[in-house]
Image 1 (spheres, helix red, strand yellow):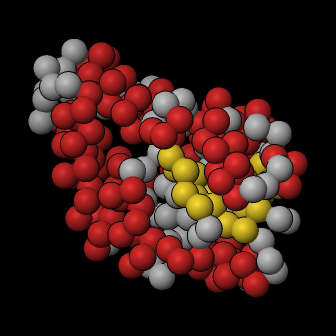
Image 2 (tube, rainbow, N blue to C red):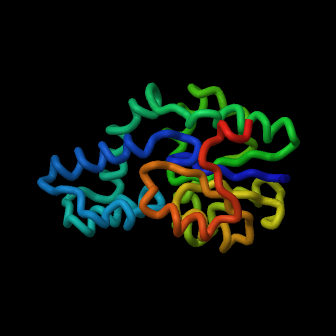
Length: 210
């Protein structure tokens, strides 16, 4: 492996529970419950795309930019002080690095969120490049964010392996011409069978590979 591209939420970070709480609280404050299809509808969207989708779906008065700011305010404390890596994730990254692989972050999170959580967990310096969906203006399914990361690393798509936990991420990795590895997260167990059929490989736990 020459280049390993890692999603954060649900892949390296045990953070999806944080977003479930934020979605629930944000919508409850505006008189809504979370619809059954809401989470699946926003998977893989950029931060701003998710804010725009939420604004339009619930006819909210706030702008998409303001909604994104509110979400930042709600989750900044968790990412700065509480969100942890998945068990074995740090050691797995260190192992790849020791074997000569370049490491990249490919995420829907903004720098204001991913930088503090990665630094606090002692892995920020392991990564060579960072790429976000807001930079491309496209969702993960398009594959653009993976190609952006590969370009910044000077790597060809066929030399890249993408680690993801959602269907849209796996599809985006394949669209970019890269190998796709599914990382299990309990919040996405409803799509586990579908995702395993899309992925080239599967990680139940990083602890199995260190």
